Image (cartoon, rainbow, N blue to C red):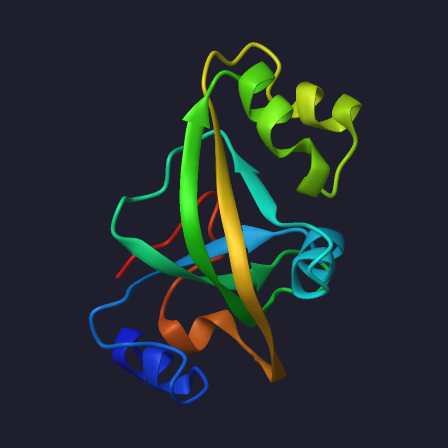
Length: 139
């Protein structure tokens, strides 16, 4: 199974053929919060590609499976202090954890997640011929 099959595996009508798709690794506790819509921002040290409109969620250990996806509303880049000020109300994490993650960084990235959907049956990553991502995987 490849990227075309991954797009086809997403629920009908949820993805368009021109949607840019990537895989993003997320800790299970944060993925649960994104699916529950109690966490609207996913924070990263590395900017995602600009053309990505859907991220498929790879939940890290102990799940180690693709569990769903979310649409990217926008990606914000700014200083960690600015990002926290603008997004903390939907962060899903503590201020302490946020600033520890971005310690020593001048730029932070906040991916605004929306329309998160959990798959009924998780998918194994190896069926897409890729290894667990450290940051992102693109076709």
